[in-house]
Structures are given as C-alpha cells and as structure tokens.
Length: 493
Image 1: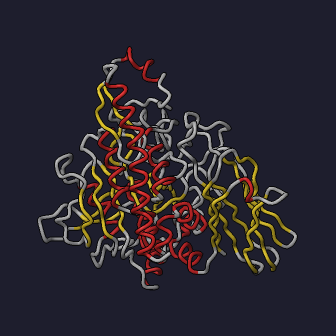
Image 2: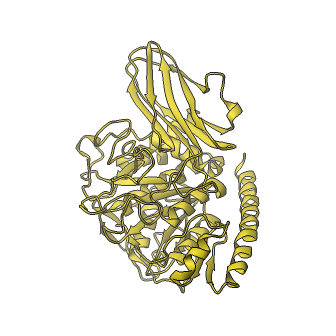
Image 3: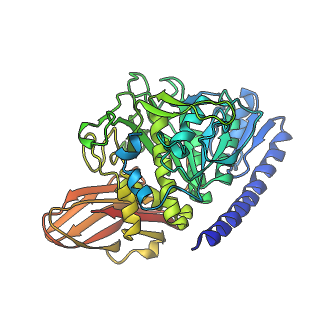
C-alpha cells in the first residue's frame, strides 16, 4: 500500500477498535457502579477499567464474566535510565537517503518532552500539559530518537515526536492513558520506564504489558521497551513485574557498552541491564529480544526556548530502547506499509541483530538475538528478505509446514533468520498462553538448523553456511489453537 492508503487504513482501524472497546468497557462500568464500585478511568483503545473499591468487593468483581484478571493499580514505576549511531550502522541508512521522515514516535513516559529545545525538529504534540512536568529523562530519550543536532544526531532525525506523558508519579491509570495516546498519535511507541525497585521487577506480566500486547495485535503499532536496570539485583531484577517490557509482542531492549567506538569487538553488556526472564509454563521464555548502546550516552537537555543544550545523560536501558525505536522509524520511512505490520518490523530487527555480544549468537540471556545492526535490517527490507502471513490452520501443508524460499546462499556466509508471531490478549491471558507454538527450520544442502521453544513468540537461527546452494525456511506448526495468527519471518546473510 502507499503511505496515504496505509494511513487511511490505520485511521479506520482505530475508529473501529475504539467503538468496539467502548461498547464493552462502558457497559461494564455502568454495571459495577450499581454495586457501589467507583469507576476511575476507562481506556479508549484497550479493554481496561480502573476502579477504586474495598477489599471485600474484589471477589464479587472477579466473578463478572467480563473480568479476566485484576491487577493492583499501585504506582510502582519510574524512569529507566555521536558514537551509538555508528555502532548500530544507522548512519549507513542515512547515506541511503532515510532519516525517519513521515513517521511519528511516541515517547511514553511519566513526564513530558521539552520541545523548547530547538534541536527536536518536529513537535508532534503532547498528551497533557497538566498531568506532568517537563522531564529531562523524556527529553533525553526523545533526543536519541530525533535530535537534529549535527554532533549528537538522533537515530531518526526526521521523525516527529509525540510526547505521550502520563504523570510524574507514574500513576497506573495515567500510564494507560499515555499508552492509548501514543497508539492513537504515532506508529511507534518507545517505553523507557519500569520498576523503581528490585522488588518491583519480578517475574510476572503487568496490566501495562498486556495493554502493549493488545496495542501491537489490534492497533498494529510497533512497541519498543527498555528491559530495565535491575540486572544486579539479588532479589528480583526480572524483565517484568511492571511497565510493558515483558509483553510477548513488545521489542524489549537490553543495554550494552560500545566503549565509545564503532568496533563491535570491544562491546560488553552492562551488568545492570535486566535479563532474568518472565515466568512461563515451561520456563523457557527469553527477554530481552535484542540489545543496543545505552552506556555513557549524550543527548538533549532541558532548554530555554530556542536553545539546544546537550550533554552526557548517563547510562541505562532507557537509552538503548530509543535506538531501536529510531531504527524502526527508519524502516517505516523506507516502506511505510510496515506501519501496519509490527511483527515484520520485529522480525527484521531481530534478523539484523548480528552483533553477538555474549552467549549464543542465536539467542542468549543478556543480549537476546544480539546487538542491533540497523543497516542489516534495512538491507533485508530492501532486498525483500522477509515474508508476512495471516496464518490459519489451513495455511500449513500436509507436513505441518509453511515453506519460504530464501534463495542462493554462498558457502562461508553467516545466515540469521528470525520468525515472529503475536500473542492474542483477547484469549484467556491469565497464564500468558500463546495461541500458537511455531518452530523454525532452515534447510540447506546437507544441513538443517532448528529453533524451537514452548513459551516464546519468536524463534531465531544463526549459522554459517558450509555449502553453497539454495536454502529454504520451514515454519512448522507444533501447536495452533487460535483462529488466525499474524506471522513474519526475515533473514540476513
């Protein structure tokens, strides 16, 4: 689709979704008000209702058919805190003529972005100027996406920034509003926030993680999140517990130190980068999905109107996440139709993550699929090394496979393939059950490479071809319980 056709589809989709959700949430709100429950907030895009009630009424609330899960709305969240662009090769995409123009990135934070700094090129608006103060953290994150400063340039300097602010204390219902506003006003949502304490970073999925999964599945936005800075915690330190980072459909990003060079050989993961995995039925979920530079980062500072102060803003996965959000913006400018295929964006970024910082090159604890390579992801897009499917049980052949021809691969080439599908948060989500379990096979001359797990919504293989020839991807149906699934596969070599 063209950009204008895609935007028309997105607008119609948001209107359809808002009407459908409103029918359910407003009816439910009216019903429970009659039982003495105070309804505080109702989400515009997601099936979430915030209430104030006594402990004694919780059981009766849980008995309603509409209620899948009750979460605490206590505020437990906070901020997650000229070489980075070269380290992820975003500058090579700039040289190809792309800077994120025509794409909007929402900075979902407690505080709001300081648009007085005139190095933020395009002001896409602010959700509320009354719910939060101007934030240095949000401004720095926005600068990493879209700064037009010639020395400290954002990854997607042509992108528009929308400040999807919640509240200074990260009030839970206000952060739901922030996520809704980001989904309404942008194609990409960056989330550099999460648990303030080690205890808050636990193995569970939060209401906001579920909301983020819902936004990806039904609004078709790409959602990116910092993994958190609790990697050194002895009690807790999980990629989960609060924020959106544990969502299946979210691109969760760890922090590595590029040592101030564009050379990958000296890169190391930050010890504070959260990597303990969310709980799952079989115990094999992996988060984060990828890693990006986030140590000793310079960006934009709070400003007097019309000035452009910059400086070192510190370390953290907060600053790794916008590197990936900016990369997504570059990909969307290159092909705007990707704005309604977030699973394809995730697959392209994971297939391009060829900087193996620690552990297995395929998938490992701290860096996920690896440090991102924005240009490699762009090349996979440009060379048509990806496929997207709307899959039903009938999509698979008699062997339970969907086959994709990768083409000719020369011996000695490193091959990386990422398969991504989405969770469906409208199903029974209490146990984080995915409605499909797909396995990834890559078959070549006298070789087969496999990635399979139970609890992930992504599979990755990474190998060096030992023999030249034609290679084929097989997407295998290990389990398929849903009606349909959005599935994407991408590869680089």
